[in-house]
Image (cartoon, rainbow, N blue to C red; front, side):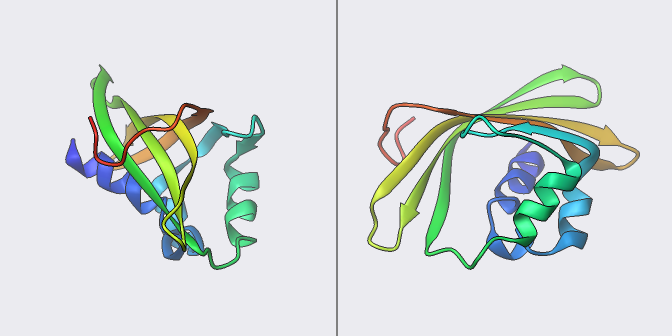
Length: 125
């Protein structure tokens, strides 16, 4: 399910996050998130949060994806992420989980959660 991993990675990209049309293609109308901060978001609040973002001086790195089939039209993605700042420092380590469901011919992110975790090496499985 490399396609779902690609969609997940797209949501890490500032250009995608700022494009409400692209976000609406990726997020389910009933989207919910429990962020790494512990804050909760629904579709409307996450779209508003993304629109308010400033151009970042960092990139989001993700790795160690695991794709688990939950049902015919539902998959769970598990992975780790970290932020790489402009000086190459790694921060904001998290374990992430996302539930993607098929709606018609499209895959939509229905649920996402981030949980702080210990530091890890980039590229290590």
